[in-house]
Amino acid sequence: MDVLLYIDGRWQAGAAGRRLEVINPATEEVIGTVARAETADLDAALSAAQKGFAAWRDTSAFERGKILRRAAALLRERIESIAVIMTGEQGKPLKEAKVEIGVAADTLDWFADEARRAYGRTVPARAPDITNLVLKEPVGPVAAFTPWNFPINQIARKLGAALAAGCSMIVKAPEEAPGSPAQFIRAVADAGVPPGVVNLVFGVPAEISQYLIPHPAIRKISFTGSTAVGKELAALAGAHMKRATMELGGHAPAIVFADADLDVALRVLLARKFRNAGQACTAPTRFLVQRDVYQSFLTRFAAAAQAMKIGDGADPATDIGPLANPRRIAALETFVADAVENGAKLVTGGHRLGNKGYFFAPTVLAHVPTNARAMNEEPFGPIALVNAFETFEEAITEANRLAYGLASYAFTSSAATADALARQIEAGMVAINDSHLSSPELPIGGVKDSGYGSEGGPEAMDAYLVTKLVTQAAG
Ligand code: NAD
Image (cartoon, rainbow, N blue to C red; front, side, top):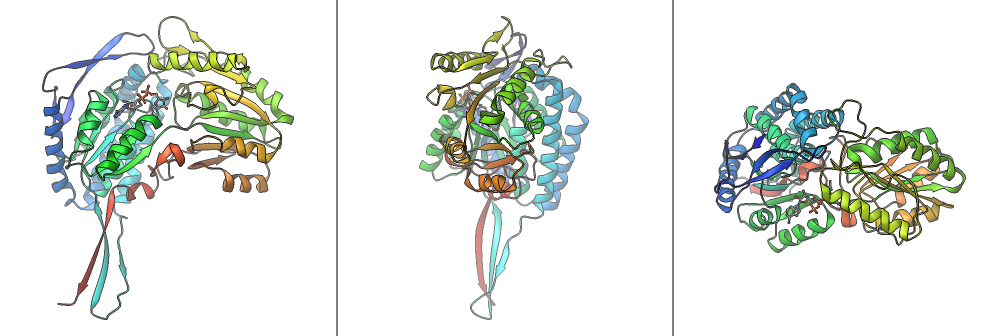
């Protein structure tokens, strides 16, 4: 697998011919390379995006929608082969890779329809011969930075909305998992998107963002990744007055009240915690369980975690694949050691598995003190921190303690508790007795340090549209 850049409708090597290695996280073998963009390549992508924008903004919303729908159909046709590439480079089980590609296709379909609903409005005028029109126009060429945890879906959310709105874009996709994003872009190109409308680059992330964000051709930034990097990029975007969407880290509380259906809570939280080996910004992390059911929840959750099958994602029996890169292993080992040192009880897991591949045992820590690092920083791995609480107020205070505010979960059979919780929790998304957080038609985004803007639902289109007033007197 040798992945190329896609600029102005052509697949090409980087200007200096430099390449980066791609590693299979299950075997640690080098499975291919990815082209590294130089400044000359970025300049070419910027010119292409400007040219592409001129053509695409004048393409009718109906035609844009048709092309997006065709891209979705191509993804579904190619799902098996693309899933194999994704699993090989990112590690997630094949079945999860297929779900991700299916959701990406659904996302393109959703935005294909939203394209034709990017309505403006007329505003009643103060004089009889005046017409006030409020128009929605595409903002212009977009620079999108997407991470390795959902290599296709993170692009699909940005690209679907941007293209539906009439924007062109340059995507800086993850170097660790470049093959499946390239296949995604290929499907979009094969569907008939004109040259220059979509461009794909890889390279040194900081070099590319420092070059693209201030560039006058770029009118909009969208980033998904850690809060620390997001703050840097948001500051740079602000310095250059660029609109930005920031989908950043999370540290989701999962509150289990004593009146909850524990079977439902366990099923939902196990699936959400260990999906993609915990490398999801919406993964539940701080499990807050009411005292009466604490021990029973902890015992059952830990037993179920222990029973999960860890292995190469290519093996159909695998429940949890390897972590995506060795940085995560080192980070998780530090989190576990620090928590235990501070008095947490390690119930299961807590260590790397084997000495080949980035496998980490599903980990449950109990009685984790608030000062442990894992209780404050995003672990981004298969670690559940399970603590007890007594009262609603105690749970909500802990849930809102951190600067993160992305996803949150709660389980209760009381409508009053659910209602109070939904109002008081500081989060962009609240799932109560439920886990359906990531459908294309639903808003996705955070508050506080988890970022701003939404990447789902009709709100996602707003990020790529500007408002123009035309007020006109009869001539
Ligand atoms: P990282 O912060 O170095 O990188 C996160 C992502 O941002 C990567 O895709 C990386 O390529 C990109 N990036 C880093 N520096 C950049 C820059 N200056 N300009 C543009 N892009 C840049 O961390 P990592 O080790 O790759 O991932 C670990 C952390 O990242 C996790 O702890 C998690 O908080 C966060 N993360 C979040 C998401 C998410 O879905 N919100 C996805 C992946 C990683």
